[in-house]
Length: 330
Ligand code: FAD
Ligand code: NAI
Image 1 (cartoon, protein in one colour):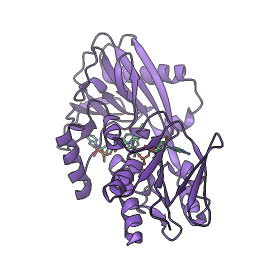
Image 2 (cartoon, helix red, strand yellow):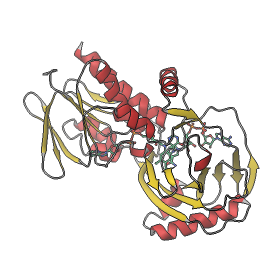
Image 3 (tube, protein in one colour):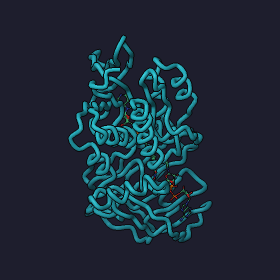
Image 4 (spheres, protein in one colour):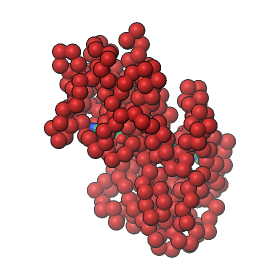
C-alpha cells in the first residue's frame, strides 16, 4: 500500500472528523467528502430567522475516559459548554421536575460549532455524494454522483450511517453485510419560535406516552442569543415510522398540538416553525463492534452504529478506525 497517498474519509460527521483528526495528528494526509453543504451530519444546526437551531443531537454526555479528555480540551478551546437545563419528564401527560447530576455538553454557540472547529483547514469536498468505492491494483478510487473520479487513495474510511455505508463497502462483502444488518430508525424534528416567551420553567423534558420523545428550549443552551423563545421537539421513532410520509405542515401541526397539551401553559401561534425528517437518526439496536475493518484491503467503516448510537459512540468509533489503520501500518 502506498502510504504517501492521502486517506479518503467519506462523511464529515463527528465519526469521520474524529478519524481525520487522529490520522492528521499522526502525520497522514486525509481528504474528506460529504454529500451535504457543510460538516456535522446529525450534529448540524439549522440557520433560521430565529438564530441557529439544533435540530439533531441535543446534547451529549461523556463517560469513556478518552472522550472525557477530548471534551475537556474542547471546553478549553471554547468549542463546547455545559448545559444544565431545568429538566422535567412527562409520563402519560403528567409533567414533573426531574433534576439530576448528569453533566451534559453542547456545541457553543451552536451544536455544529464542534465539527466546524474539528474540520479546521483539513481538505474537504462538500456537495459530493460518493456512490462507488473501488480498489485498483495499488490504491483506492472513489466515484461521485456526478460521475467524477477522486483518488488515488491509500485507504478509505466510510463514516456514513449504516444503510448508506453498506452501499459503499461492496469491495469488502463481510463489512457490507454487517452494515446492511443494522437497521436505523427515523426521527421527525420540529423547531418553533415564539415572540412572547412561554410561561414555563421547562428547559428540557424527557417524554413517555404520545408522539413526543423529547423537547428542549433551544435558547436555554449557552451562547444562543436568539431574541425569540426557541424550542426543538423530537417525535418518538415509533410515531415517526407511522408518519414518515406526512407533509411537514401536518407534522408541525400534530407535534405542536402535543407540545401545547404537555407543556401546561398558554401556547400562542409560533412566529416560526419548521420540520426536518432524519431518516437514519439512530440504530435500532446497539452494537459493540467499535469499527468494521478489512485492514489488509485498507477499508474501514465507523460511526455511531458501530457503538452506542450517540455522539460519544460516534467519536470513539472514528478514533478507533484511525487507530486500527495506524496499527496496521506499523
Ligand atoms: P453522521 O453525523 O450521520 O455523519 C455522517 C455524514 O456522512 C453526514 O454528514 C452525511 O452527509 C455523510 N454521508 C452519508 N452518505 C454519504 C455519501 N454517500 N457520500 C458523502 N457523504 C455521505 N446523540 C447524543 O449523544 N445525544 C443526543 O441528544 C442526540 N440526539 C439526537 C437527536 C436526533 C434527532 C438525531 C438524528 C440524532 C441524535 N443523536 C444524539 C445521535 C447523534 O447525533 C449521532 O450519534 C452522531 O451525530 C452520529 O455521528 P456520525 O459521524 O456517526 O454520523
Ligand atoms: P442521558 O444520560 O441524559 O439520557 C439517557 C436516557 O436516560 C434519556 O433518554 C432518558 O430516558 C433518561 N434520563 C436521563 N436523565 C433523565 C432525567 N433527569 N429524567 C428522566 N429521564 C432521564 O444522555 P445519553 O445517555 O448521552 O443519551 C443521549 C440522548 O440522546 C438520549 O436521550 C437519547 O434518547 C437521545 N438520542 C436521540 C436520538 C433521536 O433520534 N431522537 C438519537 C440518538 C440519541
